[in-house]
Amino acid sequence: MGADIKQLRTRIKSVNSTLHLTKAMGLVASSKIRKATEAMLKGQEYSSALIETVDELSSYEECRKSPYMKEREGGKICLVVIAGDRGLAGGYNANVFRLMRNFPDAMVIPIGKRACERFSGELLYAEKFSYSLAKEMAEDICRGFLNGEFDRFGIVATKYNSLMSQDAYVKWILPLQKSEKKASSSAIFEPDEITVLNAVIPEYIAGIIISSVKESFACEVAARRVAMDSAGKNAKEMLDDLGLQYNRARQGAITQEITEIVAGSEA
Image (cartoon, rainbow, N blue to C red; front, side, top):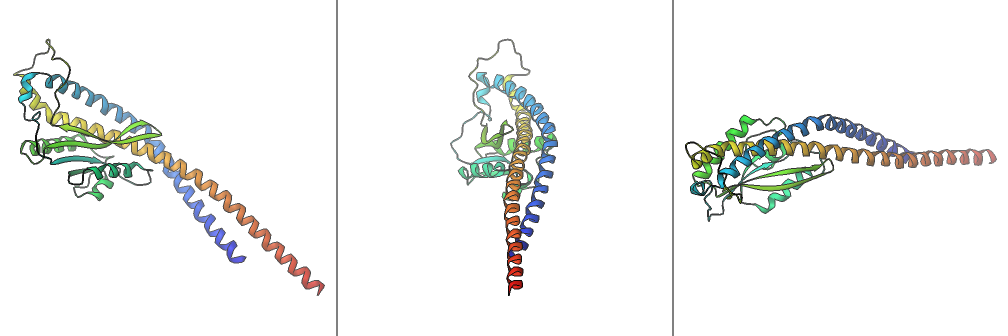
């Protein structure tokens, strides 16, 4: 009985320590959510403007001659994979890596410490990822695509639906798809549409990369907040159950001691 009480006391202490940890991580995640979502919205606004411009350009028949719009028969794929910098974020990282099972032979450019640990590449933190890094990465990607190092380029990231819901997805960027909308008769591009399109592609890819990183980081923070709240609730329930078991064990030990004392006095 004494051993059971000691074991229960140790478990209560361990779970209590875990509860303090989950509360602290939940508070840190909560403090980052607002800043992360603001950065995400700004990134989405910027990338939307770039996407609108490229859609406008790709609607011109002349731009179909661009090497960025040429369909290829090869199956070589390059993917920028964005995962988290840390764990304890529910299924956030697992969902990204599960999606990557569909592309076992892809050339991977990882962003986020967990992604860099999973795939070979330079260590890049998602939280600290900057536009200058995105621009450098975009230029390398454009160079590789034009040199025929791969035939398709896409981004594996996570979409922010709400605080409670995030979904991993793959977005294909290259080769560009012809826009369905009609070319604007009022827009004038100098020197011509195809030259402007080819010049803007590195900026376009950099904008999508940085926007995807900002959105994925907001998803990581939100997922960690929800995971820590859930872990905290589970820890409290476990503490209640362990406390009940501990009190019963103590009561049983006291009852046994009283019984032994009474039996000894009667003898």
